Image (cartoon, rainbow, N blue to C red):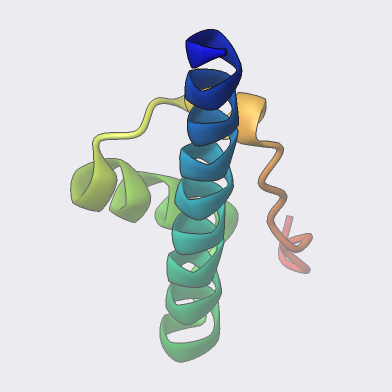
Length: 67
Protein backbone atom coordinates (compact mmCIF):
# COMPACT_ATOMS: atom_id res chain seq x y z
CA UNK A 1 0.00 0.00 0.00
CA UNK A 2 2.87 2.39 0.75
CA UNK A 3 4.40 1.98 -2.69
CA UNK A 4 1.07 2.91 -4.30
CA UNK A 5 0.87 6.07 -2.20
CA UNK A 6 4.47 7.02 -2.92
CA UNK A 7 3.94 6.40 -6.65
CA UNK A 8 0.81 8.55 -6.59
CA UNK A 9 2.68 11.27 -4.69
CA UNK A 10 5.55 11.18 -7.20
CA UNK A 11 3.09 11.56 -10.10
CA UNK A 12 1.42 14.53 -8.40
CA UNK A 13 4.83 16.14 -7.72
CA UNK A 14 5.82 15.62 -11.37
CA UNK A 15 2.57 17.15 -12.58
CA UNK A 16 3.07 20.16 -10.31
CA UNK A 17 6.66 20.61 -11.46
CA UNK A 18 5.62 20.40 -15.10
CA UNK A 19 2.85 22.94 -14.53
CA UNK A 20 5.15 25.41 -12.74
CA UNK A 21 7.87 25.14 -15.38
CA UNK A 22 5.35 25.46 -18.22
CA UNK A 23 3.95 28.62 -16.60
CA UNK A 24 7.43 30.06 -16.19
CA UNK A 25 8.19 29.31 -19.85
CA UNK A 26 4.95 31.03 -20.92
CA UNK A 27 5.73 34.10 -18.83
CA UNK A 28 9.27 34.34 -20.21
CA UNK A 29 8.07 33.83 -23.78
CA UNK A 30 5.17 36.27 -23.61
CA UNK A 31 6.65 39.04 -21.49
CA UNK A 32 10.21 38.93 -22.75
CA UNK A 33 9.51 37.72 -26.30
CA UNK A 34 12.35 35.26 -25.75
CA UNK A 35 13.40 32.54 -28.14
CA UNK A 36 13.51 28.85 -27.28
CA UNK A 37 17.24 28.88 -26.49
CA UNK A 38 16.82 31.89 -24.20
CA UNK A 39 13.90 30.27 -22.39
CA UNK A 40 15.97 27.14 -21.84
CA UNK A 41 18.85 29.14 -20.40
CA UNK A 42 16.59 31.16 -18.08
CA UNK A 43 14.72 28.07 -16.88
CA UNK A 44 18.00 26.31 -16.27
CA UNK A 45 19.17 29.19 -14.10
CA UNK A 46 15.88 29.56 -12.19
CA UNK A 47 15.08 25.89 -11.67
CA UNK A 48 18.35 23.98 -12.20
CA UNK A 49 16.43 21.75 -14.61
CA UNK A 50 18.44 19.87 -17.21
CA UNK A 51 17.57 19.42 -20.88
CA UNK A 52 16.92 15.73 -20.19
CA UNK A 53 14.44 16.62 -17.45
CA UNK A 54 12.73 19.09 -19.77
CA UNK A 55 12.39 16.33 -22.35
CA UNK A 56 11.06 13.87 -19.80
CA UNK A 57 8.43 16.42 -18.71
CA UNK A 58 7.49 16.84 -22.39
CA UNK A 59 7.48 20.65 -22.25
CA UNK A 60 7.33 22.11 -25.74
CA UNK A 61 8.19 25.63 -26.80
CA UNK A 62 6.57 27.56 -29.63
CA UNK A 63 8.42 27.62 -32.93
CA UNK A 64 10.76 30.59 -33.31
CA UNK A 65 9.78 32.45 -36.51
CA UNK A 66 13.33 33.82 -37.00
CA UNK A 67 14.97 30.36 -37.25
